[in-house]
Length: 289
Image (tube, rainbow, N blue to C red; front, side):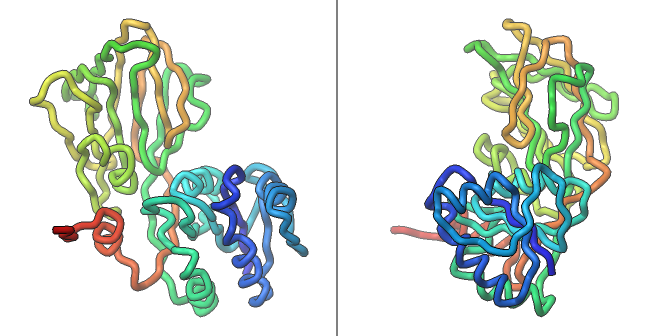
């Protein structure tokens, strides 16, 4: 098998398990390719000796599987580089919560063995696509987690006129609005009171950020519907964040969000279920009294 390895190239402590991963893969005579930036980080900052690897830049790679070493942020960056390649991604968690990257470093040997025995699951996760009038405003239009519209450079709220399939839904006066996939329901949207959604539910959630009125609530819609946003702002501009990567849009920019025409494939162990992750990561049912 051929593996493409992505990792966090900024924090040494999060790369500590990389050497062990390379050793485990070498024991199976795997082909390995590594992003040039991450390779330079491992060899210079970590002083690792990594022989017999192929280097690549950007998304110019091919592999049977991608392995992301880091947290969910690293996984999202890996997913963006995989894009339409249809390559499954395994996330090894060296971050904090780890909903996407949910394999612990202690499980690495087991999961590598399971991969070679073909004893694993691949889940397909939906992706959002953003289109806007100003094509240069948003360099990355695809989101595995969420697309968020937020206020910029002002303490004043923004006004977000929202429509679904051309039918008016609501006008939100808030600090922003989060449009999330089921995968992203346990990310930014969860922190502002959005619903937790089962990954395969084929839905999209819309959650306001600090709304001015208490009678607006998150809503969940079908993922084959189109969401249209028009924003008013006192500063005449606003932020659009696509999986955390933000850019500035002019007030007159019209945004359209809908499900992308491809999915991201996520590698999971057979004994890891979504409900296990909820209990473990969010401490459901834990009573510390």
